Length: 92
Length: 366
Image 1: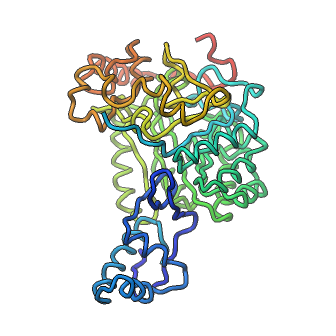
Image 2 (image 1 turned 120 degrees about the vertical axis):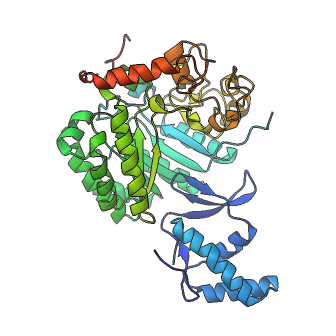
Image 3 (image 1 turned 180 degrees about the horizontal axis):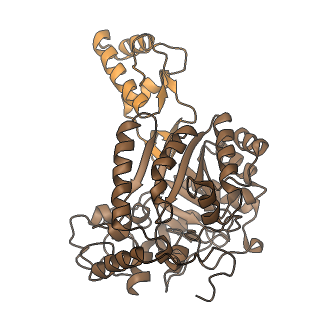
């Protein structure tokens, strides 16, 4: 199992799609036989997972955007990303 | 009464043609002929309407969907509409260049059906010589093309003891998902029930095998497993509830709440050539008929699982009781439940009769 750290570079796993669902007006994560509905913060994080930014950079961007304490944001981001890695939605 | 939600998934049965002859095929006993199939442009219009309606997943199914020469074009069309595409295939008509073409068209996921682990047994069950070797080869092409792979293994008394090997095979082939799909007894499978029904002891061994594999393979392979109806205490929520999440378009364009719904008497299903999908989903009598909980008999209507099981399967209830509104006999509260379990135990203990293979005309007259 992959452990997400501040140095990890997360991106969507092959053939996982993040798209806006017009009919339901919400973001969705599409995978084989599955539809996940990430919450607003998760969507913000996922859109920063471009395969180049490290978790450290993603957390710093979010902390600035939401004017939140960086240490707290780092833990939340790692926890959320780890959950999606465990589900096979992300690779890191 | 809750509002009707938009559908999440479309099962597009492109054709009933198939080189395999599995005796538990989910297609109806009376198969659509090639001449009755929708053309490419009509299918594209159906996918456009489905995307606008809120569909997110399209499952290309059949018969064997690769029997359609326009499969790549249909996948590409769905892909441009943002639809997540899944090919449900026997794999035997696909070669390396076709898999690459499908991947280039935007295909996301391939689900290959396996009839067993042992090649001789698999080829005998599918009625197709050399099938197993071909499937294994094509699974390699799926992975090579960077697509997600699911192994679908339909299990019954004549292959259930190979389950450990099937699981190992799925891992070896690089599948992320394995569907251990016990046969569902409608249509062809109901005709072949005595040849397919596992014993309770076989089933209990299989369940233990899945439990231990799930623990061992966490993070490597997800195993979908549902206990077969005849040995369950409560019915399955067929299709997640009638007209709730899914619909099926038959090769000739009939829009059905599930792939077996055409077996129900007194139902009139509308066709994509006559009416738009939106009107059919929200406004047709067939989709309204068993939607929600208002149609339910007692004890379903006051059951605390009414919005979990959604009344089970209408096709099974009709096939086994003669009543389309009857309690699904898979439920322990059905008056027919004991009879169902007894018949399963009796049939599984007797010698297996020969298969009636799925072929055009093989089951008609019934």
